Image 1 (cartoon, helix red, strand yellow):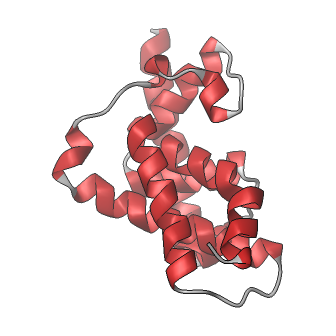
Image 2: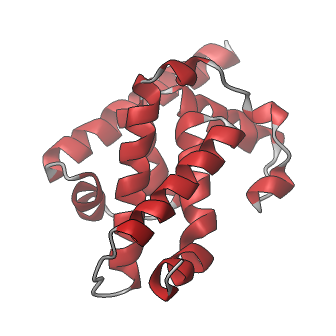
Length: 159
């Protein structure tokens, strides 16, 4: 691994893994996809203007690979958030947080990715649009629809 990809992995490996795991909900597949993201960087070195640019590129590649994975046959075999030890994710979750993450990952990818980037990675709508290569208005609409869908799901659970 060259020094740029090694640095990127050390700096953003956990971030990319958490984003992928949140998107697909399968620990083993998230590890594989994360590895593919950094392999792509190694095979196709990029010139980044700064660390934020590098992180955004890595997340864009990660979400694109998640999208490809969701289209694949392997996507049908998944473990749930309850099957994963939080220590593996380098984050401890309360049972409510695990439940919320499970619900977010159950949303269609176009919604789960914007929710994750907005609330967990703290990106603005403009930055999400750049990462996902979508129009800002589209991202705003996706975020609004995702919130509505998530609210409906959570309200059903509380009834």
